[in-house]
Length: 250
Image 1 (spheres, rainbow, N blue to C red):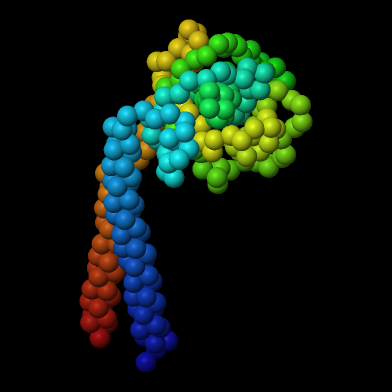
Image 2 (image 1 turned 90 degrees about the vertical axis):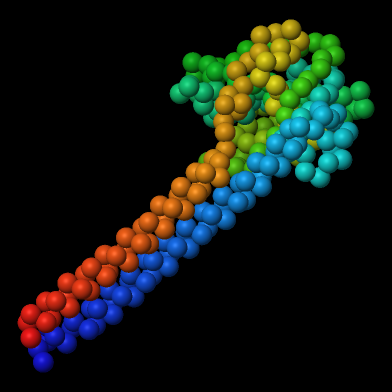
């Protein structure tokens, strides 16, 4: 038996095992996407249920262990001297900030109000002008809490006595410490058409961001399944062709 004939069984086993690995990985990824689709379906159903609930005040939201995406309605006074600028917020290809202003309620609770997007100045040294809002205002919006795993290039400590405070991510505990108050562990994203203090509403681009729905995950699952089937068919076709060649050689 020649060396070529000796190598054929070995190569056949390698091809079989490689195909088996590819098929297994693709099927696992397909199943994972189906699991994600079900998780997303349940998550969206939960958010829709929260959206149908009546708007809650800050005490009720603070008492809720899972207030994310609940409707909020609260009154208070904005602390115009301690604004927070969330850096690196892009809108229509333009760099800018989200403007978050602390609000104090009559119950002496504090929460950050996300008023919307402001464009960055001609340089990073030039901060945008922030219009002050005086008097008691009513805020309507949605509870939002950013992920604790938000990626930033550098986790630098917050600067002292620098307001507006420019940050790469919103750390409620750290910002509250700078303010000397206990901040709510979430922000209120203002309703898109609400004019705070009679001012023209800032752009609020988060209203246009929709999460990937279950159908998208199902489409990805189908793609991974198709790849697994394609790998299996390619192996079968190659095995049949090699068997024919072996018969012809003999």
